[in-house]
Image (tube, rainbow over all chains, first blue to last red; front, side, top):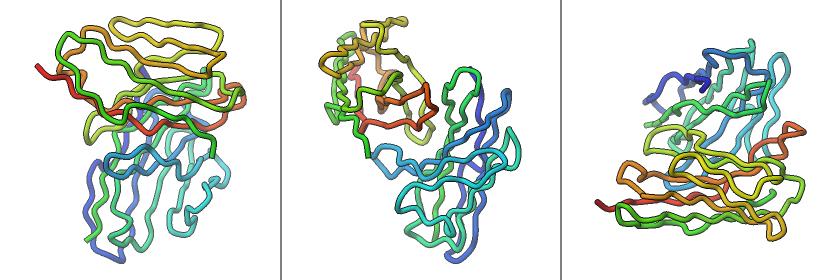
Length: 115
Length: 113
C-alpha cells in the first residue's frame, strides 16, 4: 500500500518552544491530508483538514493559532505546535488521501512530550 | 459530531478463538466502512473495508459482516493469534463526497497464548 512518512517520531521540548511535525506521502500525491490527536487509550480526534494550496480547516475547539498547518505541496503537510505547553503533550497522527481512490493512509505518528 | 458506536471496549480471546468487534452507525449517508488496526506507538493501518452494497467481505482471517437495515457492522478475526493483539477501530465515511472519517472508540484486543 501507499506510504505516509511522519517525522519526527518522537520529540521532547521545553515549555514555550515551537515544534514542527512533517507528514509526507512518499509514493503518491495527496491533495488532502488530515491531522489527528490521540490521547492514551482513546480514539483519534480529528484536528484539521489540510488541503494543498489553501488554508486548513480546523475542527471545533482546535486553536488554529496554536496548531499551525501548512500544506505547501502535494506530498507534504506540516503541523507546528506553537508555544507548546505540557497539556499539548500527545500522539499526533497524520493521514493522506490517495486522490484516485479516496483511500486514507496513516503516518506512524509523532509522540510529543512537552516538559 | 456524527457517531460510530463501538463495542466492546476491550476483549480477551484465547489463541485460536474468534474475536468479534461490533460497530453501529447513525448516518445512512455513510458509504464506506473501514477497519483499522493500531499497535502501541504506531499509526493506524487499514485492515479491511466494506461498502454497504455488500453484506460480507473476507480477507484471510478477517471478515466484515454488514447489516444495512440495522446500521451495524462487525469485524470477525478467525483463529486469533497473539500477534493480533492491538487496538481496532471501526470507522465510517461518506467517501463519495470526500468527507472525513468518523472513528469508533476503539477495542483493545488481547489474544492469550
